[in-house]
Length: 112
Image 1 (tube, one colour):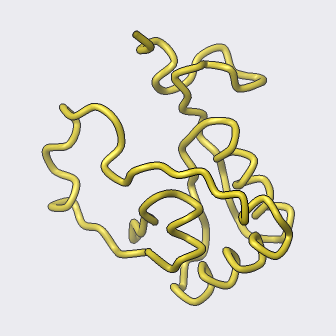
Image 2 (image 1 turned 180 degrees about the horizontal axis):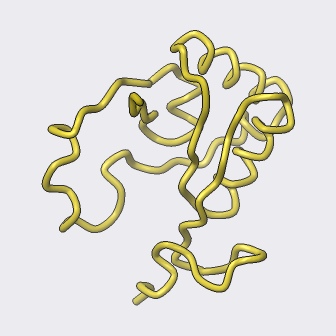
């Protein structure tokens, strides 16, 4: 299995900002808060055209499935990809702990 994240979430995906990572790239990050990949909201990805562009980028990079870790917007993006036929699963991770159907999510107990 290869791990190929996109920096800045769906914005990075649409821009083709996708690079393969190894264990060396992520060793030693567990003690740091936040995300090393950065986050970004993306209005374009909410549109059917943006979702089709995301699907094209995934196919260009040979990515066969996606695990999306995030809050409501990220999980909606995963569902949008799923709805157009791309294998995607979502893992709830929200400091707001406001994702329907979950009692707790990654980060849910850490809000200051």
